[in-house]
Image (cartoon, rainbow, N blue to C red):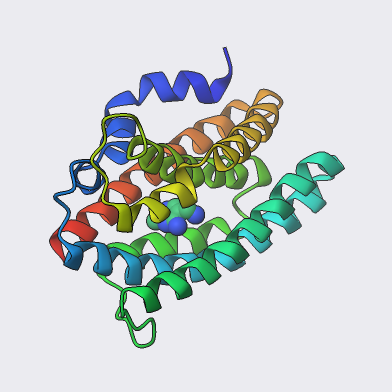
Length: 218
Ligand SMILES: Cc1ncc(CN)c(N)n1
C-alpha cells in the first residue's frame, strides 16, 4: 500500500477533524454565519500570500532533487493554480465588501504561516516539503468537495467558494501531488519518512486550528 494511504488510515481521526470541521459542516447545512465566512476569507488571503514563496521554494527543491520534468510541471501548475486563487480572493472579497488591506493575521494564521516558512529552509528536504504541500491542498479539496455532495444545503453564494477547491480538476491535481509524495517516500530513508509523517499530522492540526479561528474568531 502507498505510504500516504497508510497515513490516511492511521491518522483518520485528525484527518476527519480537518476535512469535516464544523466550519465545513455549517457550510453544508447553510448555518455558517456570514461574519465567519468573511473572517475566513480575509485570513485565508493572508495564508495564500504566505503560500506563494513556499511553492516557489518547493520548485527549487524539485529542481535540486533533479525530479523528472513531469513532477516539476505539476508543481508549476500549482503556481498557476495559486495565481488563480489569489485573484479569486480579490474578486470574492470585493463581492462581499471585505477589504483585504490591513487585515490582522490571527494567532492560528501566524502559526501556520511560520510553519510554511520552516518548510522553506534547507533542513526540510524535497520529500518532506512535497508531502506537506500535498496534505495542505488535499485538506481543502476534501473539505470543500464535502460541501458539494448531493443533499448538501450549501447556500448559492458560497457554492463558488466550494467549487474553487472542491472541483474534480483540483482533485486530480491533489492526486498528482500525492503521487509525487508517494514516489519520493518510497525511496526515502526511514528518518525522512518519519519526519514527513510528523509534518503530515502537523498540517492536519494546523488546518483544524485554522478552521477553529474562522468559526470562533481569534
Ligand atoms: C489554510 C489553507 N489551506 C490550504 C489552502 C489551499 N491552497 C488554503 N487556501 N488555505
